[in-house]
Length: 101
Image (cartoon, rainbow, N blue to C red; front, side, top):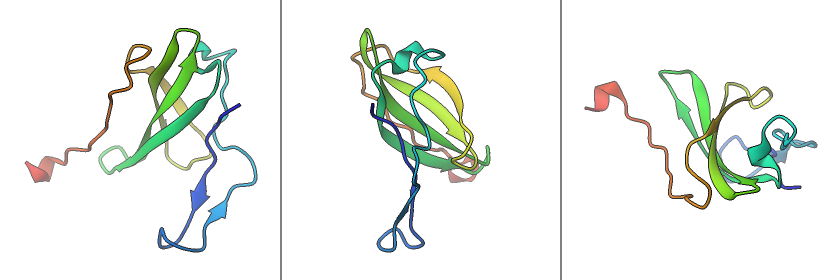
């Protein structure tokens, strides 16, 4: 079953360390949208929230959909829920900084 596993590197180029176990595993009994797995994460750090926002593809009975989850430490996750209907995976997340306006 597809899942998310954290990989870390000090410089983003070399010396990658991959966690030995999945960091975020599908839980279809609680989140039916994850029935057939999760994959393709997009991750950003949001300074104002002091947490990471993760958009990933969850595979439900109705087809693939975009799902939103948050984490501060990649050990605990808060699943927020689907943000797009099945089969519409046209989503991206860009942080807007208040001082960038």
